[in-house]
Each structure stands twice: as C-alpha cells, then as structure tokens.
Image (cartoon, helix red, strand yellow):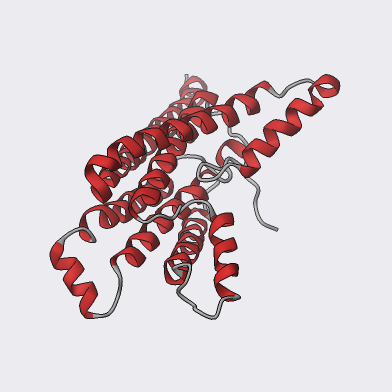
Length: 255
C-alpha cells in the first residue's frame, strides 16, 4: 500500500505555512507571466483540458492553439510524475530529495525565461519547426507540476499551490460545517495563506511581466532555489538535533 505521510513532530507548523505560502506565491507569479506572454495559464489544467476538448471537436486542430495546450497538459503531468518518482522513498517534508525537485523547478523556469527568449535559441527551434511558445509553455507547466508534487503531501495535508478549486472548496466546506464541528484553525490558516499569496504572486507577476516579459520568470526561479537551500539547511539541523538527542542517553548510561 502507498505510504501516506503524516506530520512529523520535527516539522513545525511555521515551516509548513512558510513553505506552502512561498511556493503558492511562485505559482501565482508564473501563471500570471504565462498569461501575459503565452495567453494561457500553465497551472490551471481545468481550463486547458476544456480548451483541448473544444479543439478536438473542431475541424481545424490548431484553432485553440492545441499544440500549446497539449504541451501544458503533458508538461504538468511529466513534472508531477517526476516529483512523485523522486519523493517516493522519503517520508519527510524537507531534505535532499525535496531540494532536488525545487532546483529542477528553478532550472526549468530559467530555461523558459532565458533560453527560449534568446535569439539563437529561437532560430534553432524555428529550424526544427518548433514554436517558441510551445517550448516555453511546456517548461513552465513542468516546473509547476514538480512544485505541486512537492506540496501535495506537505505536513500530512494535500496542499495545492498551483490551482485553487480544491482549496476554495475545502474552505467553503469548513465554513459550512463550522457551526456543528467548529473550524480547523490550522488547516484554515494554511489554505487561506496559500490563496492570498497566490493572489499576491499573480499581482507581482503581472507588474513584472509587463516590463520584462518571459525574463520575469527568473524571479520565481531564484525563490525556488532559495527554498531548496532552506530545505537542505532545515534537514541538516534536524539530523544534527536527532543525533545529539540519541547521543545524550548513551553518555548518561556510560557514566
């Protein structure tokens, strides 16, 4: 049976809140820039699959930019699958594997921002008949797929940082049930924080994307790299703390 992560005692709630909040801001930023540059969201698969369905029933297969939509769908799926494969052996919320996924996300965002914007790269893609928007869309979607894979079991909760239909559904259900069952304050705080920071990230993405276009994705790439470094640091401190706690009883017994 698949393992379902549970909140570890060493994972403070502030870590989960900060982790999920920062990544929600990243997703909002990336999605806003994608809408500006590509005219498509790369984290909202509901809209993408709807337009793909419309495209399938149309005699002109490119009417709704079906190739771009397909790149987003399969890019996101591939990113999520990669995150699942990397994180499958671990039962913690931070560490080298989580950092590796976040570094990969940063690399994909950098490729979408810099590589595809460069004239030489565009010329090379054109030689092979590949459109720049298709590659950019696929890279950005794969990056958010990786991210969503990281946060889907963060702190034992299914936290979505790239889309919010489920989040708003959960908040609505908790409000509706609050009179009888009370409000789960901790879960409500996390879901509300991710929603608000996603909105803030979207606002920042629009303001930045207007000036810098695809290059604006360098900013969320840097944030992902910083979160990866923080994940490694936290895991190192956790291991050191555990080692000290284990060694202390042994010293006491030796005396």
